[in-house]
Image (tube, rainbow, N blue to C red):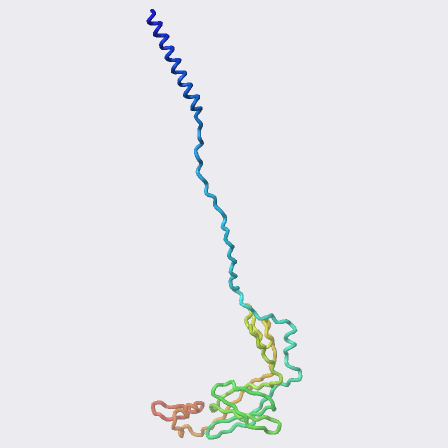
Length: 231
C-alpha cells in the first residue's frame, strides 16, 4: 500500500517538474511570430522620358493649281473692237520650172503661217497697199494658210503653274483655270487655196519621183517603169 502511494507521489512530482520546464522554455523564447510571405515584387513601368520626335509632314497629294478665272477676265483680254478680220485673196496661179505657184494678197502688216505639210510660202514684195506672198507645193492640191493681225492677237500669259483641277482647263490667254469655253477671237483666219497643174504630158516624165509629185494626174507603172496618165 505504501509502495503504491510512493509511486503516485513520484509520478506527480515528475509531472510537475516537466510542466515547469516547458513553461520556462516558452517564457524565454516567447510566442512564435508568423512572418507574412513576401509578395512578388511588381516592376514599375516608367514612361519614356525622351524628347518626342516631331512628325514629318507628308507631301500633299494635291498639286498646286493655277488660279480660277474670274468673269471679268474675259473682257480684259478680248481684242480691241477696232481690229478687222484679216482677208487674203488669190491673185493668180502659174508655173515656174514645172512647179506650181499661187500668188496671194493681203493687207500690209498681217502675218501668215502655212498649216499644210509639204507647202511653203515666201514674201514677194508689195503691190500697191497689198502684201504679196507666193506659195508652192504639190500640183493640183489644196493647202491652208493662217493669216493673223499681230496688233489684235491676245498674247498668252507666261505662268509658272499651268495645272488645273479635274474638269477644268487651263486658259493660256488668261492664265487661269476655267470650265467655260472662252470664245476669245485672236483675229486669225484660215484660208484654203489649190495649186494648178504644170504637166502637159505624163509620158514625158522619166523619173519616178517627178511622176509621184504629179500623182494627181499621173501614176508610175512599176512593171513597165514608165509614167502614165491616171485613168
